[in-house]
Image (cartoon, rainbow, N blue to C red; front, top):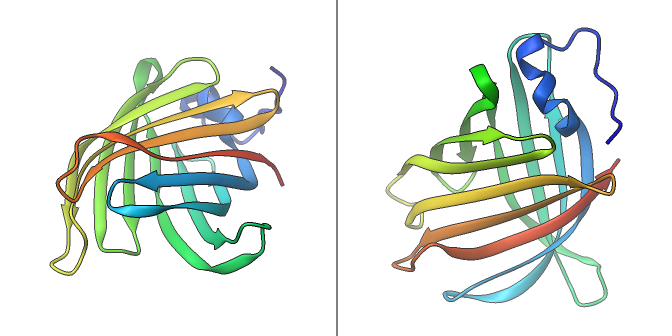
Length: 164
């Protein structure tokens, strides 16, 4: 795998350099409490020289021919590098959910799971999540499993994103 490591990247973030940049693409989702859907996504991992990445994701729903129906989820947070490839992710969603995730990077694969999920009074119930990100043939693939609305942890969304 070949990707450029910026000169000003904090040394603790070198194992995460493959995530850097803007990624765009499409994905699919379903869950027992909602109809299946197709979405477009832009995902950004940025840095400023300190030992964390700023993460931002925005999605929009697509119709059957790939045209935008409406805006959907927004989430933002900070991926904090820890020793030995471990990671902490602090994540806030526009829907009123905030989460703390822990995990580990292994080459061009990042696996994380929730430790804490909190929500506002008006947010839908979300109780747990697992995410897997991987660099495959130059694309960023990911899957998000979720436990919510009384359902067990199970697949929710998955996408393939290309460098923008």
